[in-house]
Image 1: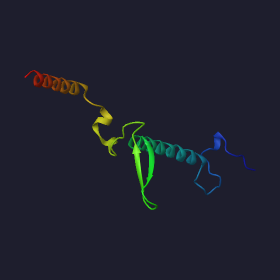
Image 2 (image 1 turned 90 degrees about the vertical axis):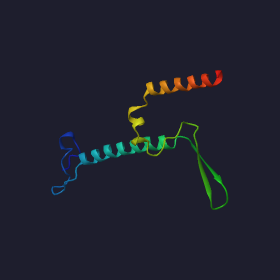
Image 3 (image 1 turned 90 degrees about the horizontal axis):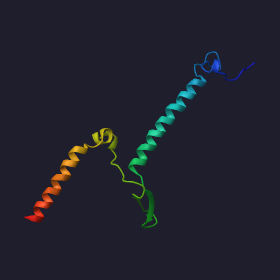
Image 4 (image 1 turned 60 degrees about the vertical axis):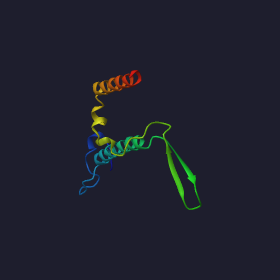
Length: 109
């Protein structure tokens, strides 16, 4: 008589010569959920806005992404140094001060 799945037999096959277990199903669902999560994060960062479709004629559509919900990233953003390590705030501050100084020099001189 069959017992069903219990914690004690989660890694046992249903048939004697079968190697597929319920634990494999759980692991595959976990891996799939991680893949779908990473894909969703990537797509949301590359296409953050609403999608509008304009009809130009009966066979051609123009799809335009409006950036109402954020600034779209470039498609290769996960491979950029700035994405993983951020921007150097000190360099940005120095450059901003240089621009202000140059602007003040141009206005007075």
